[in-house]
Length: 597
Ligand SMILES: Cc1cc2nc3c(=O)[nH]c(=O)nc-3n(C[C@H](O)[C@H](O)[C@H](O)COP(=O)(O)OP(=O)(O)OC[C@H]3O[C@@H](n4cnc5c(N)ncnc54)[C@H](O)[C@@H]3O)c2cc1C
Image (cartoon, rainbow, N blue to C red; front, side, top):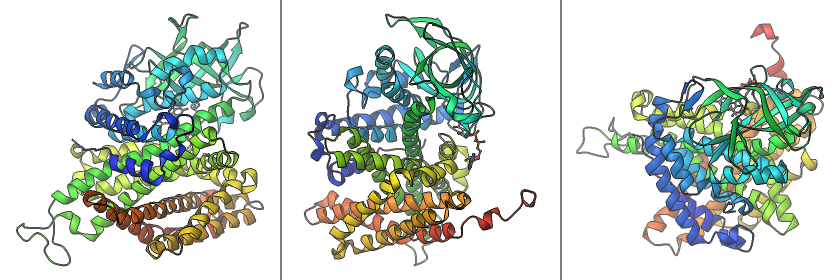
């Protein structure tokens, strides 16, 4: 069975040393999360991930979900594991105290989710989607809806889904056909077919709250006529008890490449009773709350598969003996040296390790700024938090999942043929990681969101705030000899990113295809620069702590610095290539007529 150990030392480094959580102790939620409590939470979460969810990962992959007589059963052990999750109060971790949540910062929530997803990505999607539904309802629902539905989502007794996709309507939601007709008593009848709905039907919870995009009959065409509805699987009586089964049913389950433990459903709505969430025709705005949250959650899935695959690849590389080191035998007593002596094996492992640690820092840093955007009492801090969340969401979704998949493939490569067969579990990481590049807005669309929307918002305020954060760090630390190997490459990456940003500003308006052509390289350029920024910050902390550190800590900081050096020297140079590609623009891409492909 594949291994997974939650990287607790990494989390402690991020929370206590890099981000210094204690400085926010006066803010709501943070006040309830002193270091010792956070530590206890991390320990307990790691046990759930390692002892309960990990052993179910391969079972879920092999068994998959089953549909019989309209009832979906999840793989063996999922129901019991879900109950343990509920009993442990985990779905309530970051939910509002007003609805029974613990109100802790979302930065802790993403750490918990990473552990769950590394151990068992398919399982993690059930509570993950519920939390998205919770957020949409808590921001856009009526008081009555919130009081009726949120407490059960918070305990995890009920789960949630998001229903956008239809057979003819994926990225382009303007094509959506599901319709809503008013009943006259404040409720609506929803009809239509949704496909690919994750966690759409299952046996884990008593009720499922579907958040469904539909067009009000007679409403405007295109995205301007889309509304959001809440459609429970079982109608809920005024006293909170469950009533009749609603007119929504699972028509079939998709056979798919990975995440077999998660039910991907065709859902048929046949005059199902629903309630409007938010305003008529403004459904996309409400759904975006859910989608933005889900996008961070999907970015995290990329990291989670990269981490799980990496841990296994390292264990294999130190055990498997094959060939001799180029510089002479390293283990004379053995017929060959372990794989870990070979530079090319190290290249793959270090590409993954340096990504994982830097990406995790960027994820938690972004989530922390998301927390500050609504918990801080300082206007500037709130604005910066909002800007970073908006700007970095497509980067984290798109870049982390592109890399997450590539890293799972590299980890598989470390195993040679033993990674391709199913027995060792590497194939599952590759198959599971693949979907994260596609759903929640395919990565090409994330890149367009970044270049087409996020750069221009508020006159470019967010991207310039990001540059300034880097500049402030460089101004403060550029004179420190020990940090030069970090600050100099960071500034080169930042220069490439700025040049690419300005190139879009100068060229994309007159020819929007230039934006489309360069958007994926730009998203990757942004991802590398963001991670380089985190590595520079982490190197500073590690150097500062090194002098007084003892034994284990000393080794930890030294490894951190060495890993960061690798990232700066072997990964950051990519930014120059991305810039060249962006500057070549759309012409070479658009030169072929459709029949020349
Ligand atoms: C396992 C699984 C689970 C899913 N879970 C859910 C769920 O829970 N809820 C839900 O609503 N949906 C879900 N989906 C659907 C998923 O979000 C869509 O598949 C995805 O949004 C892409 O839509 P599409 O498949 O129709 O592809 P299309 O929209 O046809 O896109 C095909 C390709 O074209 C690109 N493309 C499309 N339009 C443009 C454009 N304007 N510019 C540039 N490139 C473009 C895309 O990036 C993509 O690469 C799930 C899908 C799968 C496979």
